[in-house]
Amino acid sequence: MNRIFVAGGTSGIGRETVEKLAESGCEVVCACREIGRLPTHHGVRGIPFDATNPEADVAVPEELDGFVYFPGTITLKPFARLTDEDFLSDFEINVLGAVRVLRQALPALKRTGQASVVLFSTVAVETGLPYHASIAAAKGAVEGLVRSLAAELAPSIRVNAIAPSLSDTPLASNLINSEEKKKVAGDRHPLKRIGSPSEIADLVHFLLSDKAGFMTGQVLKVDGGLSAVRNF
Image (cartoon, rainbow, N blue to C red; front, top):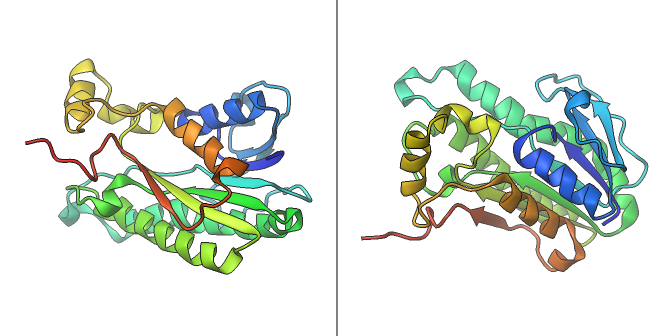
């Protein structure tokens, strides 16, 4: 794990991941909209990128050991209020954004012979949650993409995904912007709290490393037990 390409990385889980990778000695190339907000660690280089721009090209290095795509959305509305534009926007950022950048990075990933790709899903794909129809549909497509690419790109490139529940990130700030909201959200989980960006960044780091060398096509759930455990 030497040179990692990260899409996103200026806040939340992305920023934590960039910091952990840089601290472990990796060279991190981070494609993002606000390069000035990147961590200032040695070995972190920013390049312009906007996940909402279908024409966006990124300056991918010649060789890559890993790829992570962080841009995402949280569109929570009753189904009757969701518009076609809501569904298209979630699909554009979560699925097509990842597809476009990964397509550009693929030759560099293939050159190293053993590379790792990490994408992001959500607990709402496996666990039915109200008001999540649009984002669950988009992330469900991400899970299908992960399994298909894991089969197609083996054995030289591993492809896995992480499906977190609610975490304490800027993207989720409107859902946890008070101690009361944070407690209510945490109490929905068997572990009685929400996740932290650092915990999920640790899993990204693991999936990129040789320690996960026998894992591909997996969707790993970091959700405080929400998808698997029921407390009665």
